[in-house]
Length: 302
Image (cartoon, rainbow, N blue to C red; front, side, top):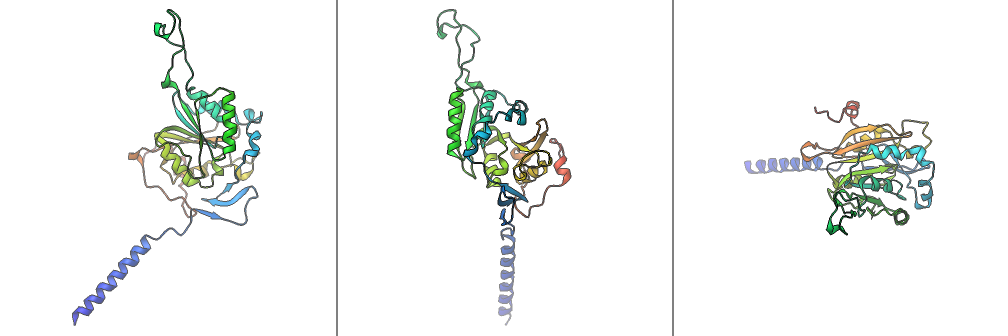
């Protein structure tokens, strides 16, 4: 007579355990991205972590990227030195467009295939006593120019040929993957492009995989905190928002550089394996980091 009672108790416990496991493994109720019918006319209607993703600028507006006043408005002469690049670095320019920054980055890391003066005379180098250029591949850096629009890459490669720049590798990426080699890049730069990513979480995740340990990822965005910056709202970003969205990635904030007239330079570093902590899942229900976490110095350790 006791066996049916034992059996009933076992069945009840099994059902309870299965129900608890089902609840534990249930997917998050908040999707990573949401779509809203009412939105900014310059936006896509697609939202990520409270921010509307902007519409992508097409190749038809390529001339705007090469406008003469861009030198004065964005001061690339200040931006590129702020990146502290070294000859021989591997750099990725994401959303390279016409190559406005690609060309400057290529010169900063050293031109692959370009001769440099020899340090000595050598009979093997030509006639006796004549100094000729020798190759120094250790100083030949490379720039991966990533675009999702083939038309932009056509414009970019034509401009590179016109300036005889040969250390750039054009890459046709996708909206979720820049198609970069794994663990091969020292620095990834995005100038006024991240806010247009259709899948920002997946794209950054793929970019982090392309970084070397300790490699840097740099966001250059028009300051969303400053209403005087004459850029459409969805094409600007605040520092707080950028850092909030990166909280779901294995990155640590290094510094925010404020030397540019209208943009901030927000620098993150790829965490080495020993430094990594569990990442938050980026989504509509994700809690933002505390104000203390946003303001702590790069070398802070709790």
